[in-house]
Length: 207
Image (cartoon, rainbow, N blue to C red; front, side):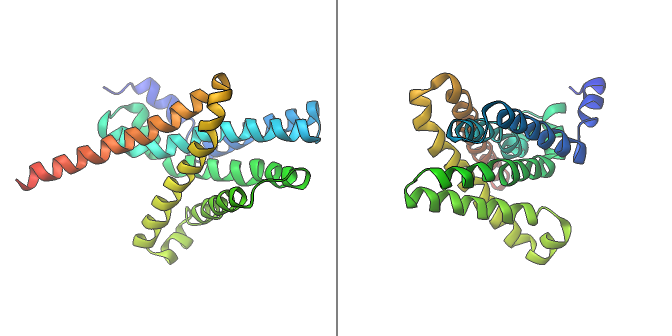
């Protein structure tokens, strides 16, 4: 059952207002970290940890929007579907503008395995491609079928990178990482359940 007052509150935080709110809040958080801890290795590490974790929230919200609305339709799930594009844009801007600079800065003062850099680097390429094709003209140029392939591959690849990065850390720091691993794994499970439900409904319809 929909709640008109709740729907109005959700509508007040939609579209580009949602993007500016999410990215602006994260920018203030980054500025606070830099102001307090500086740009030495401890400050950069904290910057990486905080933005890496907070970025999962709009990403997971965009990831579960459609499957959640299919399984448990509500005012909130309808809002997620309506703002899925803007949640994705928010995540991409956060990760490219507020997380990637810390990654580059960290690489200047630390050494990481080449394979790890390549895996993460490809994720950033996909995020940038998904961001560009979130706008009408590039999406039209790419074509609907190729757009779907790009965004599906991009979503699942980025999800894989997030889980592969956070899961080992959750073992050593469960309080700070386990909630985000739970969020990400829950999003994947929800998507699988929604897929299985669609397949079952299709089989029932064709029977």
